[in-house]
Length: 241
Image (cartoon, rainbow, N blue to C red; front, side, top):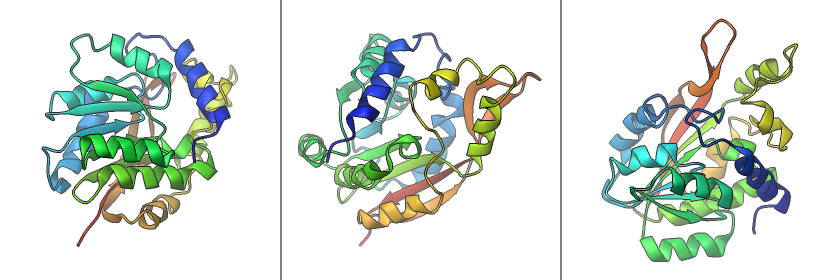
């Protein structure tokens, strides 16, 4: 199955409008605060760090470029062509490569796996805002990319994040500037239940190898100057035996 056209159009609209300035996107905090801590959790579980690494849902590629400094071959994949335009412009040296990919479409993930072989996959905050009917197909796609030897690292907002987001959105002046476009384009964050993610992984034939909680940094600040952080859960998964 492919993702819904509404979902695809929401992301194209969002990324067409997005500024290319660093920190302009709500969730695009600097890698030292995001993918850096995630890698510290992920790397001990990698069966083969030399496998290609796929940054799935790479957006404008901020985290992808950080990963490309640390792994021999990194591919940023995203549903949105506009997001990939941002990523390529921000990576003139071609540290990573970029590919449009609908990971819920079985034939597309199978074709990428045939090209790359087993991969390690990094996925940050993709499941929680995609359509419910697309989630299992997306995780099945991750399982295809991982194959027998790869590992997947998923970070998703926990249920506790939604009240934080709604609190920000319901302020007297409405959502803060970086959060407003998310709602305007019909992207609904924080919608996947905490206990659903391990079930999606198990249904795709993957075993949860480790999990935990970690705040997810954003680029938005409260009026008192503190950075907005969202409660999140992380999981490492792969095939065993």
